[in-house]
Amino acid sequence: MLGKVTLLSTIEVQPTESRIQFVALKDYLINTSNITRMQVYNTTDTLMRYKLDLHEDRTFPFSMIVNETNAAIQILGDVSALSTMIALSVFEDALSFSECTGTPVTKYFNVEDISWAEDNTANTISKIWVQRGGWGVKSYYVNANIDQIYDSITTGTTTTTTSSSTSTTTAA
Image 1 (cartoon, rainbow, N blue to C red):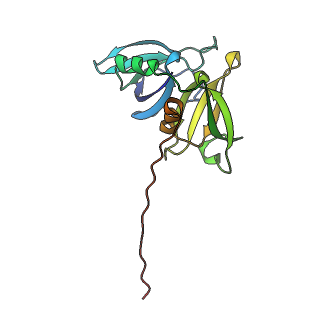
Image 2: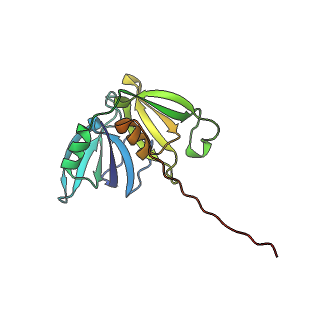
Image 3: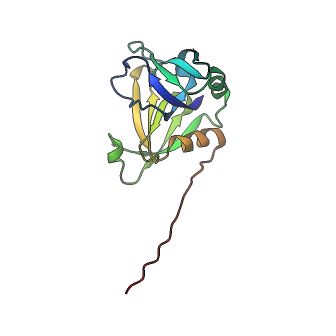
């Protein structure tokens, strides 16, 4: 199942050809099925080996330290998805966060195939990596942040927070 973890650091150069932008103290959505090994690190953190694409034998797991305990990660793995498929609004043909313009198109994804997700700096758009069997992983830019994706998977709804402000201008 998918779960949100906070990355503390990576241990080694990641063998994923810079597909993922690691940032310390940033949250990521991971597929707990892709964890190949985990161990306690500094009593409250976890050192894990993670494989971006389980079906690709030519890539190796990379190591990272996350701010969650082994027990917390196990709980994430035990959470059931509300549905096997999820509908996400995707920006077609976008190759970067800055190219996410226009009207997104709804695409359906198998929840178990989502491998990794990260937010842009504004936490409004996320980039997800989806496993495609033996064909590697493919990235998509989604018009939702990782919290909204996780809520949609586990509850069927998304939570959005909006704020508004008012200002008054007086002409002299």
